[in-house]
Image 1 (cartoon, rainbow, N blue to C red):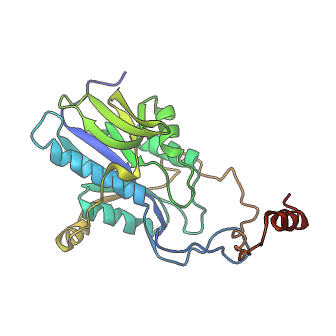
Image 2 (cartoon, helix red, strand yellow; image 1 turned 120 degrees about the vertical axis):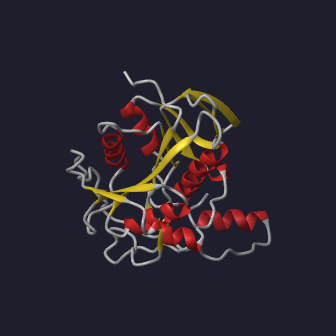
Image 3 (cartoon, rainbow, N blue to C red; image 1 turned 90 degrees about the horizontal axis):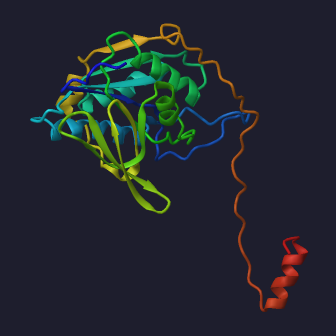
Length: 267
């Protein structure tokens, strides 16, 4: 049984280093992946999650649901530290880097969820709320948050467009976007929440905060420290760009259109 929740909340925000959203992704030579030698930045949905954690702290600064600590965690090679520094510059308090070999492939959602589970399950783990992006813009799997909730047995609110932590610090109301419109759900902490695009607009890190971020602590762990096997279960056989679009044409009549379609094998 989890002990009674403290009035001071601690938020864990997983962040991923991915190809910058402004970059046109190209297939790498060999066709088994994409060209990684381009600009990288924090996954945009994770940036929204960091911003929401900071807003929750500002909102509940004088209530019983005060946010005591915001921790960002990233899983990846040495350059993932840059992503963590971005989160720290935005306002997070400390960071955890689960370091992988630079040549290692990006871990799959199940492996990521198991690593996060192990971090949360460590003795004296303080985390009451996990905020993470609904998906990464490179793999677009949209699975990590849901798998993590299942592994931990915590409630979840996915695709959140608003997040409201009750002043008692024990429950959260989440408005989420669904096919038919908006749905509002309420769950008790601890809880997993995945953030959607319309939740907020992330802030820019100021120069003073960028300098302060250099002094904030980053704990470095390895998958073996957390007793998790991150060996990929899937293999990319080949990857190719979509076929280039060809120009259209004009026809003088419906009959000519039907004839053209038949000739091209489309009718």
